Image 1 (tube, rainbow, N blue to C red):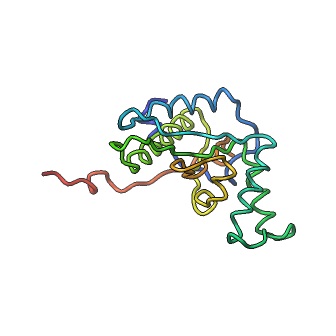
Image 2: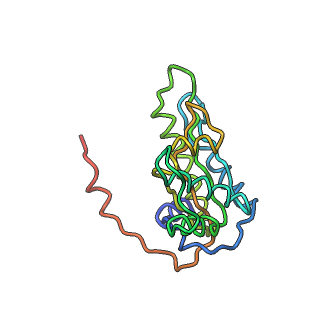
Image 3: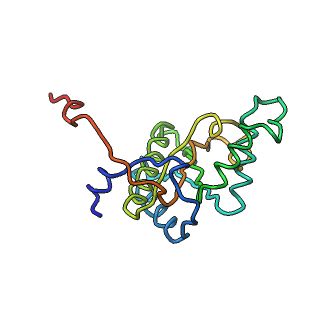
Length: 189
């Protein structure tokens, strides 16, 4: 698949649209190799990834459940449907990759540049996943941004979690995409 096809055919496949079948480590390594070639101001290469497969997915699920209760409040009860659903959901995804941006301490590098570089690295991963026939989905929100998640991931400022990239084999027909015409979003001067 050429790059233009990968770009046009890339879609986000939600966890319930992925099969639980394992994804070979060599394929995940291809995603990271693609990520590694994202642009970064000052060649800081701020992207970092933490991979959860196998039993470690349960550890991540337990950490996510902790973030579902306000800080200082007791965790959700073992029989809480939201807790059960989250654990089931996360332990069925073949590979979950924590997306981390580790900003440079160089004062010439602005943090938003590091965040954007990390996002471009994830886009490279997503395009490569598509080219390999894998589905991917970037999930963020409270679970990713909560300080308790940073602690679980072993992060210290300025590094921070930007979300999780779920990877697996599609369990559904590849979704069709739609976009408005590109030139509707362009101004020429």
